[in-house]
Image (cartoon, rainbow, N blue to C red; front, side, top):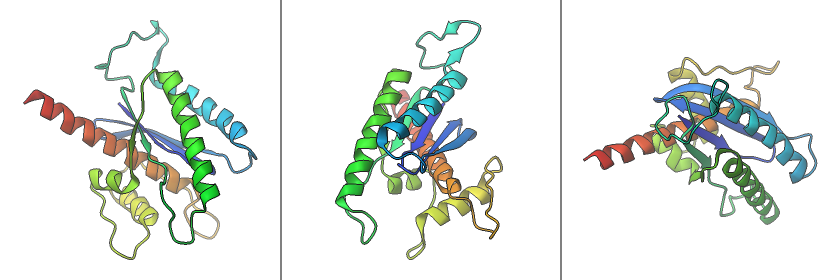
Length: 194
């Protein structure tokens, strides 16, 4: 199984994919927390829940390290944080804060799962997941619509005005990260077997 994470200081999305099928997706709304440490505490709780659900075996207590177990997360992919300014969207302070938060979450993942996460850029993840964003269209909206059209397990809620709730986009991005991770790991295992 692959865990995909879309890290943001406002809403962070999580998704678990097995055999290219969505097993789990959720998000944590961090907008009401004022500093990175409060936000990190909330993320830590979510990570522990995912670990408890997908790594902890109640019969055998802690699972032995076995990378081939089908009911265990054996790869973690995180959307790479931005490294450059985007016209009118990202200030130096925003990029610095996001990079620090990405590092904190990465450490929490490493500490809990005892594995180093892999990083993937959003554009690369969409490509691996088979999603093409036409020129002039917003990637987040294209991704959301793609998943609604192609993934029966993916459901979203709408605001009273008929717009997708904000967490929908972060959950969708996490699913794309997880699906891209699955595609990358499949390609890698096929190369290894040749």
